[in-house]
Image (cartoon, rainbow, N blue to C red):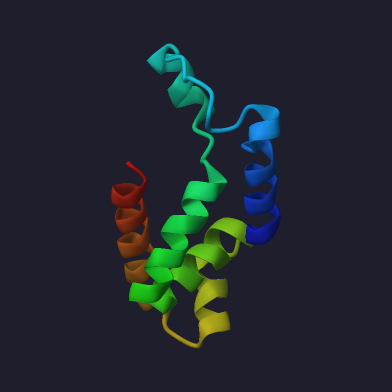
Length: 101
């Protein structure tokens, strides 16, 4: 699912379709908060960097965000406790938030 979303985002941002080369126009902050749509290409880059630093946390992000698994399901898949998954998930979210801002 991650690859599909990243490929889709990259296609949309291609120069042929006016991708990153276009000038951005700021919108009303209330509208931006409502949209809250991630840039999947930037998210993929950040996840790749996270994977180099903390592979388990990156895997947890993939399983939670892209596959939609619960904490308990991720713990079962990875063979760790739900508490460990929860700690790693909190760390990964904070790290990604910092990287994407």
